[in-house]
Image (cartoon, rainbow, N blue to C red):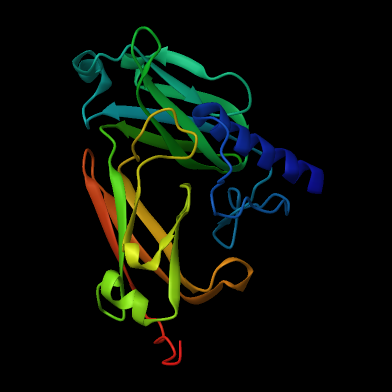
Length: 256
C-alpha cells in the first residue's frame, strides 16, 4: 500500500514537471493516504480516497469565449494537455475538450498549453485537479492574459521603511502555494510574484491566491519567527493583484 501511494505521488509530480519543467515547489496540499476504497463514490467522510481509477475530462475557453471562434482570434492552433506520466497530448484548439480514461485517483496538476501553429506557447497554465475513483471528473481552464501578485506589508500599522529600524524585525518571508517563496529585508515593504517556478512564460494564472508571511528577527542560524500571518487576494487577467499583510514586531531594545 505504501509503495502504491509513492507511485501515485510520483505520477502527480511528473504531470507538473512535464507541463512546466521541473519544479522544486510542489503543491502544499497533502497528496493523500492510501486507505482503501469507500462505498460512497470514492469518499470517506467527504474526504477523497486516493485509490482506484477515475476518468478525467478537460474543457477550455479562450478569453471566456468558445474555442470554435476564439482560437483564430488569438492565433492558436493547438492545445497541449499533460494529464499523466508520459508524453503530452496535442489537440486542435477548436476541439475544446480532452478526455483521459483510467487515471489513478489522486490530486494532480494538469498542464495546459495554448500553442501557435509552430508550437510556440501563447499561454500555459496548470489546473489543480482531483481524480476521484469510479467517477467522471471534470476540469476547465480559461486561457487568458496572465497577471502578477504584489504582496506588501505594514509593521505596527506603520510604513516598513520607517518602522522596521525601530523594531527587532530584520526580514520578511512570503510564500504562496505553487509559487516560489520570497525573502526580503523588512524595510523593503513588498515582494511581487510574476511566474510559476520553471515556467517558460512569465505571468501568473488569473485566480484566487492565498499567501503566508513571516516576519523574522536575527540572521542566519540566529533567525527566528516573530509572527506569522496569512492573506488572500485575486490576480486579474492582465493586471496586478494585491495583498497587504499586517505584522506586529517588538521595539528594539534601547541599549542597542
